[in-house]
Image 1: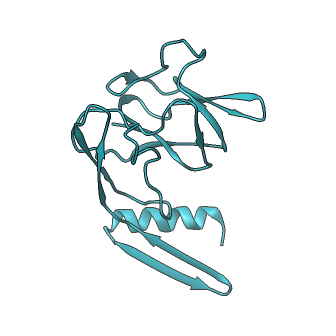
Image 2: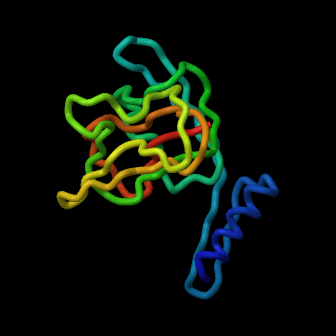
Length: 157
């Protein structure tokens, strides 16, 4: 099974509002689930925000930093399916210098190709660019956080 076949299956699951799909073909086993989850996040201010994740999810994917309140954004339901994922493992930086202003914050308007952050991997700085035009709905990781490949970094609406 090729990656294009998997992508077509994911699109079909999404288009037909299926909640799960399982395929076994020879030694290949594929399971796709569409879930919604509500996570209550409490920040340093004591205010609570609800984060709703939906769409085709990576297995056990949850916003990094949800437990310690690093998610920025309005205290409203986050329902965008436009997510920027980490393309590699490394350390995430939200600004070009330690004392600099963050590239983006929740509520900022962004354009496709705009730099959202930097991931340092093996002493190389890799710019993370926006894939969409829109507004930053949430920043899902904190500055200087270690991120994994495929980890959600930003939600754009």
